[in-house]
Amino acid sequence: MRKVGVGLVAAAYGLLRYTSLAAPAYARAHPHLDPAMLAAYAAPWPVALACALAVAGVMLALIRLRPGERWALFTSLAMLIILLVTRITTDPRCLVVLDPHQHGCHTFMIAAVLGVIGLALAWR
Image (cartoon, rainbow, N blue to C red; front, top):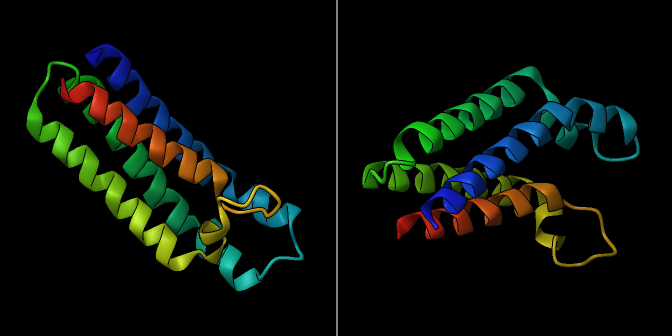
């Protein structure tokens, strides 16, 4: 079960990295959305920071979480919570994520839930 959990955590961080790298293309493809909000996620600094956290999360999962080190689990959980709280409080699209008819941050929320499920499986 631990290997499956570690794989899910690594996949979640990979998905978070993908959403960060895709943010500039998303901003160009949706000019009707608020440019200030899109700039907050598609600017080089937020993209680089989110990618750095995602790479650190993958390395943490593959190197330290796989052998079962508890501090790695709590550190990874803290990283996911920080990303989740920051995104929910700054992006109003995340509040409509449960409505399938509105566009929101579905990919980000799926990655966060996937990471938490993976951490729960890696706990055992």
